[in-house]
Length: 185
Ligand code: ADP
Image 1 (cartoon, rainbow, N blue to C red):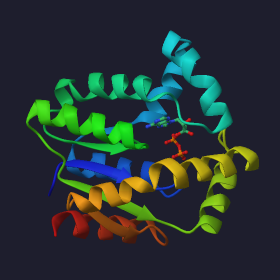
Image 2 (image 1 turned 45 degrees about the vertical axis):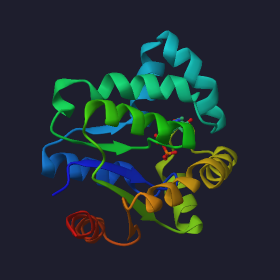
Image 3 (image 1 turned 30 degrees about the horizontal axis):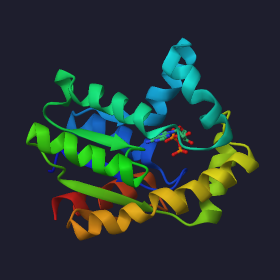
Image 4 (image 1 turned 60 degrees about the vertical axis):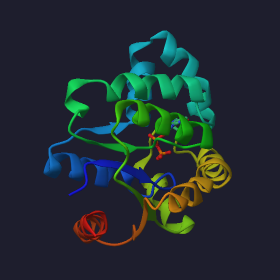
């Protein structure tokens, strides 16, 4: 099974849930920029202070902040045998920076999995989850940010023959099975 994976999908599409299962079953780390940023906010670090306002508004945190964070994380020893990127890249500059970084490491991505779910289902899930940034207004803004900045990455990865699309609706294990099949195909 491919080991350098990206999970791409709208907020609430299930990236976090499926990323955690992949981590457990493949024995490679799940690298979630959302989790890393929330940890920085909780720790009150300078980076956290910079990120908080954007996160509260449902905007993207500055590219250079998340790119720097990812560069450090992928250089950790546990990422040497693969990883699941969850929530990164989320913009074209992030995707290009990732390409550069991986070219330098000589270890390109194996697959980009697009988790597809419709907006109605997603809003319902997020409102049930109830995280601090899961208010209706913030959710709407995160959806817009996804459409404008992240969705174009589907074409970016399709052109590089890396993209597989999986239906992200239904039973968690069924979705996992679809991901497993798609990345092995
Ligand atoms: P979700 O995908 O459900 O919105 P995440 O935990 O992935 O949740 O992201 C939460 C917030 O963290 C985003 O709305 C954004 O402010 C910030 N964030 C996460 N990943 C990135 C990224 N790659 N680039 C910029 N901001 C990010």
